[in-house]
Picture 1 (cartoon, rainbow, N blue to C red):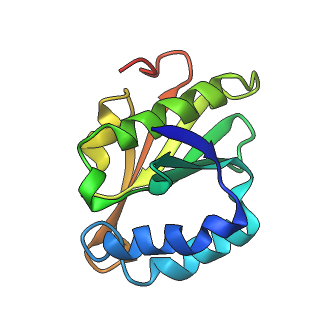
Picture 2 (cartoon, one colour; picture 1 turned 90 degrees about the vertical axis):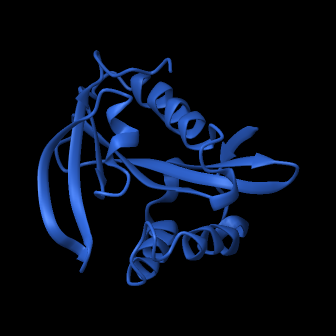
Length: 153
């Protein structure tokens, strides 16, 4: 598996990944949010590729608090889930984030369906908001200090 920076020509494949994971992990209404993100905030967005096929994607962006970096839009093809793609993308981004000295905390907003994945890296739940993205899609805001995050799974 190779991880490379996202480019605009990847957008259709990224949207296909989202659709393959809807409604199990994403609400139908989130597609509009992803399109906006890709068009406006994909400066640190990456794709995992094998045999010229995008297996997964994910990014990170600065939160309002300039010492917090937020992991965003983790999506893995259903046939590649449980095979290390999500872990590889997360470890890759943690390494990149750790290179930025001003960042003290890494945050992720996820759902009740996926939060246990992030616990493996040392993220702890800080907030839960019921039906945040859509009915049945609660938001779990999780955080971990850069110094204590497990970036070596």
